[in-house]
Length: 188
Image (tube, rainbow, N blue to C red; front, side):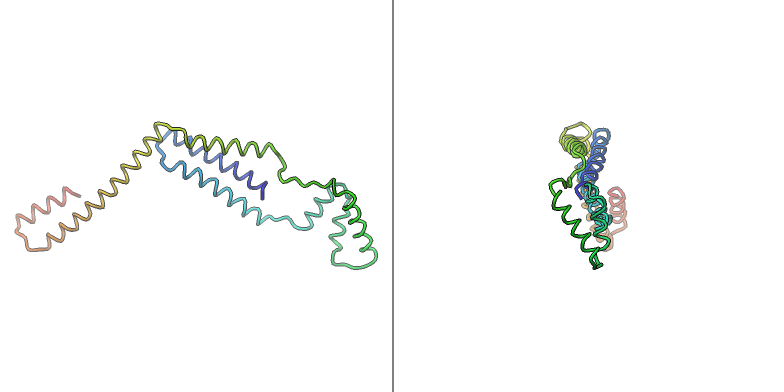
């Protein structure tokens, strides 16, 4: 899981950096949200991949044998449900070897400190880019505010138009109807 998370955070941070670069070039208001979403998607992907590609006990036994046990662990695992004198001796030999050389068995959580360093560098770069002010980011924020205000005004105009339509249904003179219709067209 840790190995997959490191890789996924590297990819997510790389995608987040691309979103931040785009935000420096064009007005892109949601760049920070998309950058964070890339990290979340990366983490979820790592978790799903880890759950789907879980190591079997046989693979774990093979890995343990890579510490120099010359297939004693794999053989013991293969004969786990069997009983007999030979199987018992073989298990006993595997356990003795494990006990004798247990200080030699070190399973690293991270295969590479280089990958962890790259991940930290990419995450730091993305976070720094989120907070660097630029003219395009300022323009994107202004555009977003203008769009929000326009939505509010549009909603208010729709309410006024509905009220005018209700007025048009009441008994009005032809001149008043024509004036009301002209006002409705100009508001639209």
